[in-house]
Image 1 (cartoon, helix red, strand yellow):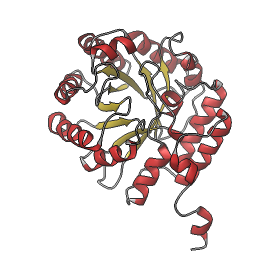
Image 2: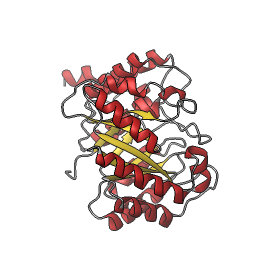
Image 3: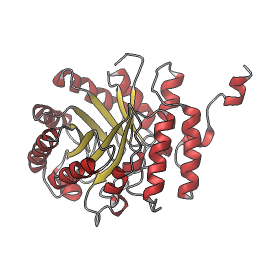
Image 4: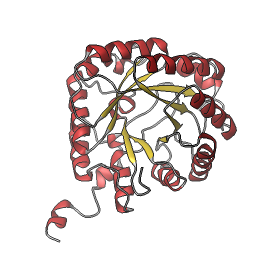
Length: 312
């Protein structure tokens, strides 16, 4: 990927909605996905195949996958937490006209958070993810793994960087096609992100690295820039800055897609997202959810309004 280009992975249909009070219909979720395609998103996390009793907002995962728009050039991702989830994702993908392109797995960096989130310790998580990677690849799907709590745990506090990097190296050896470092509760600062990305690039070689940033304490865009300067070129974000983990106290929204589009665009870095279209999609989603969304760029708009550009 070019030094002046980054890739956005849009996670609003999954991470953005899973912890929200509003109940979006399957039809609204599919409209959201269509709008994300229209703003330029090329990778979209569309659903998670998890226990519907624990995450009821994701109960329609199969129905969402069944209705995915064709969208040539777009890659659809299904999140899974265990082998049963991977089996469901594979079956749902085969039964749909379009299907999934990639399985997203989750590995938690601490025992306490891992037990709360998935009912397993770090060692159990490594074994589970190894099996999930193998199962997904047998079905012809690529696999990425997100290491949750990479910069801090809601129960254990700071997480040693070397532990996270050791986990990443083990997952890479198991066959992961991409590794993400997630600031799940939004506690990371740029110095941490810089160090993690630099060390990961040293240890993982050419394996693609992604960051998944939450903006709980207002550090999201700053952390994204730190990751970029350290060599990361793939970023998760959610339209409107929605998001949060149901099993992590005080986990607020993802860094907003509009804010990354503004950050990178005004820095001369191509991200593929049309900011004007993203702002329009923000307004649609806010109206659909019945509330203003957290994104500051979504509220303030672009620095140069589109009508001024037309007459410049």
